[in-house]
Length: 128
Image 1 (cartoon, rainbow, N blue to C red):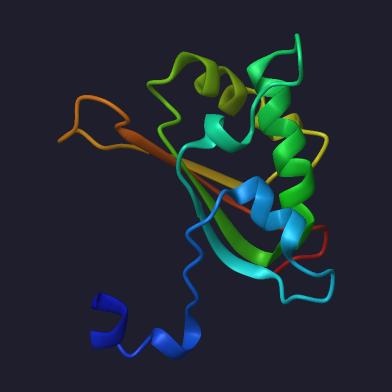
Image 2 (spheres, one colour; image 1 turned 90 degrees about the horizontal axis):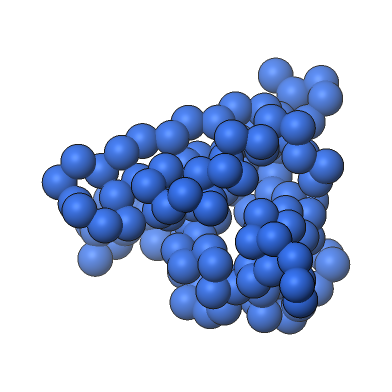
């Protein structure tokens, strides 16, 4: 409703899907994404068998990151107060799949659980 009121419906497409499955379904010639909101990160980026949770997140983002448009954003929910994901966030600047050009994390102080978001911006070399 908000996007319609703001006149943005023609510029948006909402996908309610398992992000990992969705990545496997889209064609290589599909347009790149300007903004992706990922909720339930640990559900669709599970750790490899016997591996670290952080390795599962990195493996998923290695598949996703090339699909993000230069200047585009990936927003991850529940990152700062989840100790495992926070460990991953602290090392993201040296990620093999990126690293992102800009990182911004925010707390949601009105919530007790799942109370933070982190936004990654893709800034490839030469991006202005």
